[in-house]
Length: 468
Image 1 (cartoon, helix red, strand yellow):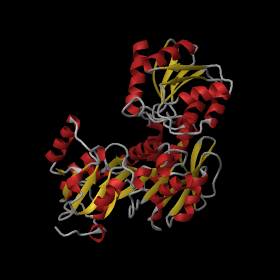
Image 2 (cartoon, helix red, strand yellow):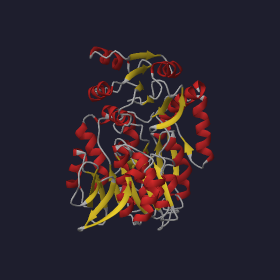
Image 3 (cartoon, helix red, strand yellow):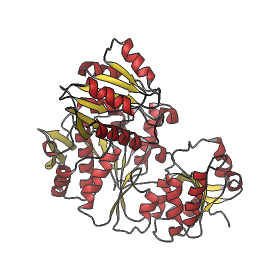
Image 4 (cartoon, one colour):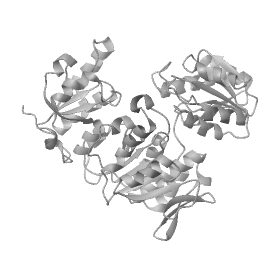
């Protein structure tokens, strides 16, 4: 087959059979690889999946069977390197500069992320959400609002179904809400949402991106292809996000939970006000929401403004904000044991998330469980918050052992160590007074002991259930 190249792939937002005659090579046999294997044949593409592994385990063979049952083909890397492809799709967990990709890139017309390819193939309008923290809550909430307004609303991307699967069977009336990570944005070159939300840029993923400025630049890729007809919803309280307004042609709507804005959305006496063209409308009431805290107020305002830009009526927005109960593993009360409220915030995978969670319990006795890989974060700000709150801390596992050491070096006395979740929960319930809170808000990723943050959160939930 002749290689069509990147020009043949541009503008393929055609829906069914849009990729007929094209060959797509997908690297990675995880979530992205399986999603592409299931979806791309529906667009007519010849689909080949490979990976960078040297050998196959029994689990790998099971995955390969699922890939081939879906109508795609699996090739080991040594064979895939000899195959030309129109598009090379990289799973987000694979660094784009991995030397093992050199030969594959050489033989491909273009390399990209699954988000980019799905954009080329789908029909409909797109609201995209990115940010270090709050993406899933904001995308889910925006999806709830838009589902009440548009019959064919699909929430996908870094949440739920992969975008490429959600794109299958889409039409002009389809509305997408897509959560996009920085890893996915690295492979986006033409992706242009109709409405984009930039929530925040906080220290995370720096092992991959190198510096904060480089990380912010990747996040800003969400906006760079937008046109004057689009709307960029930007957090005016985040300096790095606010600066992104200069790099987009889209109309900008800022939002703030700290001050009133001449144009955009803000809080006034707890009400969410959207001000445009000298006129104001109420799009929500923070006091009526079930999700609490300044960070959730920011997430809600962002979702509300973006949904309004997509055409959702204000009354639908207000109702959705009032009814939304939040998500699992995000400041989720999982039960009470011995008079202690037990809260699962396993999704807190960086110190800024943990700081936001800790502030939710101001004025109460709190015991914080921290754990996870040591990603090199600076926890100084969190330590100061812990001291100000008088919180006790349990450090679970060896990954964040330095946190216990650093807290004790600062003079902290309420520090304990635990080998696993069972002992962390037991110690936490012993040292937290009745009426207090035991908060799992790890401040780092889960891969030292768990498959993902969901598994970590479920482990905590199970231990609390046993203690009740």
